[in-house]
Image (cartoon, rainbow, N blue to C red; front, side):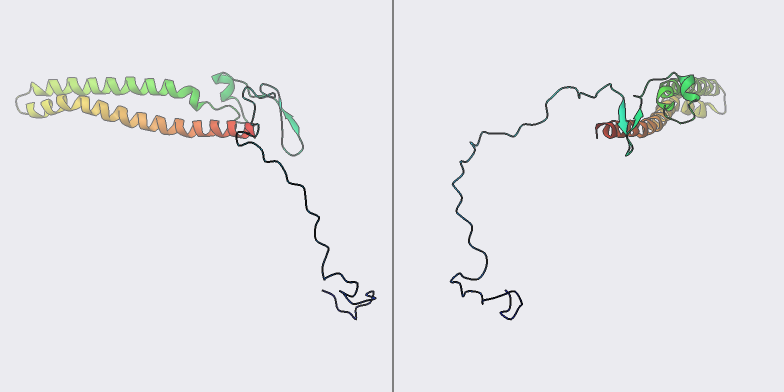
Length: 167
């Protein structure tokens, strides 16, 4: 509301017969309601149109070639660390660990059987022979947990790359 003594106001408000404030809005015509079964269109299923094409990234929109699979030797020589070597080698390391644990436990079993033939220490030999499968299982479980922890970390990075590429 303005004061009647303000410059530019020739007559007080309400003197022209209109109430204070702007005129009321004109009534709008009634709108038809949409049927309840109407659904907004969603994304079209199927491959993205830019899938397999070179990507444009960053604020300056520089061209980045799509990632390509490299061999182990090429990945080892990659100084930018764009290709990860560990996921490629983890299967080899797991099989090697399985073989080494098995050889160690067979040697533990054979040593236990040999000690069991001695006169004074036969009980220790029996304990070693009976414990060797449990030692094998425990060691294999520990190696598996370690390898899975490493792979979970690398899979997480892989999934983050996929999410980043979708945005």
